Amino acid sequence: MSTTRATRKIVTVLMPAMIVITSCPAVAGVKRLVSIPQPLWGAWAPNADACSNATDESIVVLSAKSYRSSRTSCNIIDLSETPGTNGPVYSARSRCTKQGQTQPTISNLIVRTEDSNRISIGSDFTTLKMHQKCSANEPITERTR
Image (cartoon, rainbow, N blue to C red; front, side, top):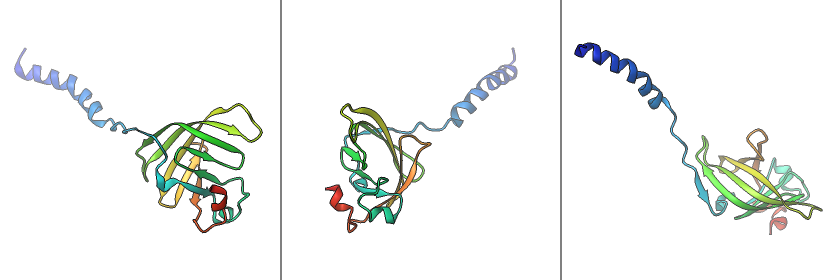
């Protein structure tokens, strides 16, 4: 076999493999966290009107190792952070108790940062809903203490 023919054979076999390897996206670095980052702590609501209504059911309150809404209270078991387009995406596996329920259930929470005052929250990526951070001056702060 001539050198040229051997070279062509190597190129023919290796080139497709090299293209596949170099075109694969980088694997995202998942970090395990012990708590929700402090900038996310506080009350989050779909709009400013909900922030001013302490009884609004759509408000979600995030703290270091838990989150709650008007009907559910959850303690985080596992928390991870993955890089996203607009910032980190947080995924929490939690033990939750609904109002009137005695046995906790396991639940998931996805928090995707949109910007410094907006996040999307949901149990999975298909249920994410945009929320804005309620101001510390809003009446809701009494409920978060």
